[in-house]
Figure 1 (tube, helix red, strand yellow):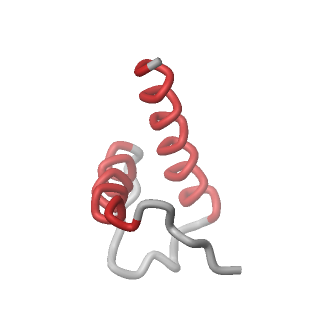
Figure 2 (cartoon, rainbow, N blue to C red):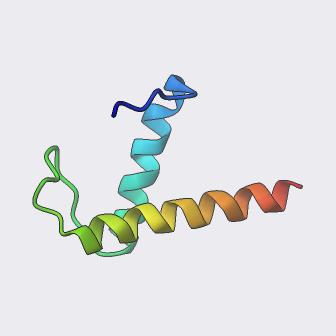
Length: 60
């Protein structure tokens, strides 16, 4: 299933954010990240969502 990006312009910002979070978690990202474990990928994505939710809640 292909997901449609709601804001395509956010791609670069999200990529930068992903690399920032990965670095803080000690995960080295490359151009191809197929060698990441599910645990590593989940940790990065989960932390990203957590921070985005916190940022949104602060803006309310």
